[in-house]
Image (tube, rainbow, N blue to C red; front, side):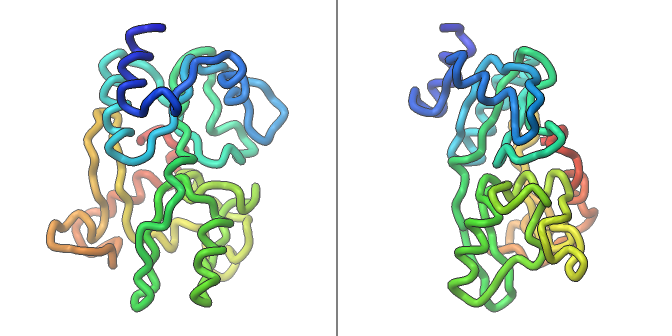
Length: 213
């Protein structure tokens, strides 16, 4: 067990990290049939704070980190490009944080799937409008935003999923956590506006395919 592995294990606990060859090989592919690079480590954080700690360590050692949502990308976006790096699997981050029914704004974690979110919203007679990427409802919300996805239904009426985006919480490679839109204002309790608080920093992370997080 390497020193790097031990440091990361202290962040998420033994249950949510693996360097098993069987696990690592599973993360060398997505829905396409093409095998690509095999990561050194697969890790599943539970929140932004754990991601921050992971990225700080990876940044110190100049190690590539590949974020992975639902693993439904048809173009290999969440696979390592060579046999190295850390895959950051976001499947544990699959919760609805808040539903503001008055303003029709829902706050979710990045790993929640389009299907799970819409199942939840159906209880209130709501849905997301754009239903995410063409790869299906098992794709993650974070992945859809990162790919600026269309094709999952509703896009002709509502545009891409990022057209409905209000705010992002982003963990930078240095481990710094930033907020965009109205959430950047410390007096804002809940997100309500993407453009009313200075530059639209959220757009930097829409269509970046994960390279800026």
